[in-house]
Length: 124
Image (cartoon, rainbow, N blue to C red; front, side, top):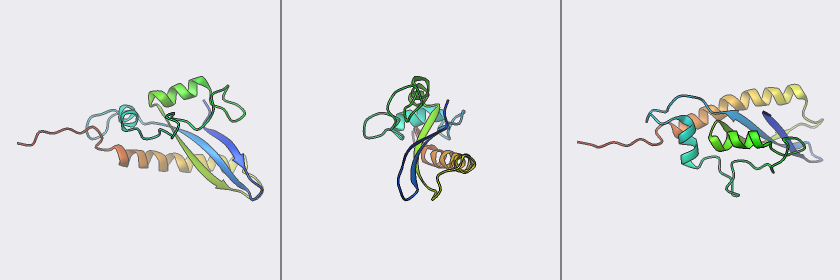
């Protein structure tokens, strides 16, 4: 599956990049799997009601493959869209470094947002 999709760029060196990150296995503090918490929370749904901004296709040329979209819909992948500035264009090394840095940030943010999702208690 593809981790990075560059979907636009402008004359000023601003690029829009779609990134797909794995959702951690295991459960949150409430005992809900991270995948279930992500899906049931609605986080990651775009205004189109889909979990991706990419059009369906073969996963090339600015599209998402069926398998990739299925992983997003199953909650095993999470999509974010980032803006990247590179006057000379994004180098492969810079994109890889941006992905690695964004992976840690995205998973940490997801963990904070969903830590208690689904918690139910009866208080005596």
